[in-house]
Length: 304
Ligand SMILES: [Zn+2]
Image 1 (cartoon, helix red, strand yellow):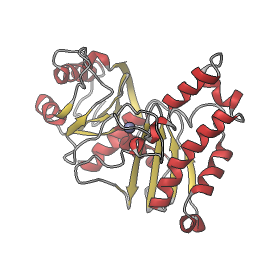
Image 2: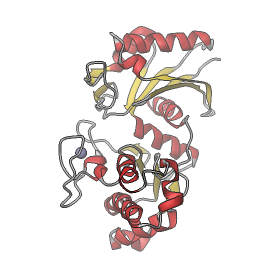
Image 3: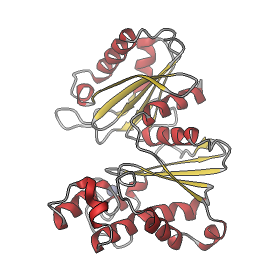
Image 4: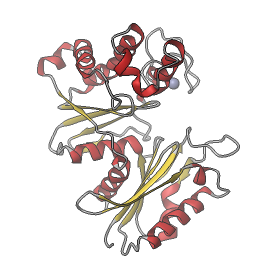
């Protein structure tokens, strides 16, 4: 294979890699455990070895770039990982903290290397997959274990001063008193996340498998409140951004039986009236393991 971009999605649990061409399809999919990198003595060197091995086994020639998505904010240089709180080494410390990951990879392979936030990459994938490139404002909110968000305005991802923007999972829910993993209390992630869904399962439905939570219990009070909490996150963002399209994704909305009609009604009811006078489209992100890999490649291509 020639002229591909190597896209990598380095998640909390799995590292996925693929070779992506101009057709935006993922060839030679590869998956391994993130812990192999996280627990290595020299994590960046280990990552480079895995990439080199992948490149050789798949006979990849003239690779155009290597692009990595990480579950962390990334500085505006698109090289430096701010802090991977959910990728930790054996001592329990975050593996990459203010680490320039791209510089070492570029040095090793002598080709362009980029690092971007994983949710940012997934939104780029969803925009390409659904041909939303011409839209003015696209908001993506992805509820998985935590809450991730990315916003693209006039084709450009919204960036804060340092790259730490849209830390939506830690937006405060008024009067919330549940302690959050970040050290604050009452963050939205404490009420609208896969973590919370798991807590509800343990408390109210210990005999239900997590994947059946919506199909079996969506009309009962704990799940109704949960859906309301999720809807508030979307309503908040819709009110701020007046989007063309609101992308709903992540492990929670992608579960079987997620009550889309109830959810959308709650979002609409809670969104500011001026925004609702114009409305917006809902688009549901589909479950697909290649999203982060292809999104990483799309990001690299936008920078080459
Ligand atoms: Zn928090």
